[in-house]
Length: 532
Image (cartoon, one colour):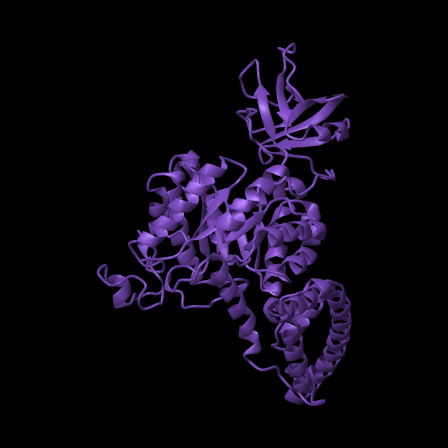
């Protein structure tokens, strides 16, 4: 039986009135929650240019604090926005849906927000990306950051990285020395000047990362499940039977109770505490790869769920901070967890910078506490100086659980888009060097996922220049299809029966007809492959 148009129209109007009432109630609760949150953030919001972003972030937190899953399909049935892409313009998105519901319901005046509101947030985020990581007119939207190895302090590595497509370089102050860091900065500035461009330099403070220091392994072999080793405050020379590793923060040993899970080297080696004694704990390995794992100096140690109560700024960090303030464009804040941590660092920067402009600050999110405090960390930092957020996925995965990581990293991306704060995505593209020289499925997919962030960071690797080239091409290809959470909906040519002349011609400038920017080293347009 066919539905009569009048009956359908009446039913749609009735549903629109119900939805209008529900969404109006949600909006009222959102406004109230935002007002309360903004009142708590007000003392920190010293930069007027961040106030609107903070308010939008507060709106998003209030909206996503409600469960609106049942609302979404009902809005979609009326052909309306489902609020699934509201991050950059939360209140305007709600108001636009309300206005459309009023039209369908035939009740009240429908006033839609101005169209420019819906692009302003994305434009602001792009401007902040360019200010922090460098602006350019060609190449992928996502900027590329490379972590410099020691050898970058001399030679031509930095110049090769810039030629391959690097926008900014990262110096990890957990390694090397101040003289090496300064030489890296000089190399970066000189290479950029010779290339006629600028390069952004980020210096990451090491932070209080737990790690292995001295290691003594009488067997000099790999550990497997069932093997035992000792974490200690000092290597016992008399113990020649077991592998021993000295912990960087020995005061933590007293807090490791029997049954505590310990992870080493980004979760590659897992062990559980089986015995405790003053200054040392005995652990039994319960998780490794099939071939086992070595204990190595410098490898990180994670203790999920344990509040370490360690100051976020170490003496080593304070020594590195003077050079970072003088030479770096961005300062990476490792293991930041609380607003107090942010305030402490900002006070140090303000006292030491003198007449120099404030650098940008990168909040590295590595622990569950930092994840839970992230909105407040952003407000405290971005209220005073330019800020980005790094999803430090290695430590974060171990701390929150690998099964929780995909959800957590998406939530960080959404929150930061709402705050109009750029995100750095730490990618593992370099792992492909250990897989026979070809990227694996995981590395390739990881590179594609990185396109949703404003910057992607590569760690040190034996094929760093090749990694940059590979990553850049993947990012260029993905730009055709995705912008944050929004599908670009460009024409797909993969299954078109008759390719265009430009698609057939090898001599044609790749990507010209479709507006694709060609990556260095790429030989064809990302969409030119066709099923024949």
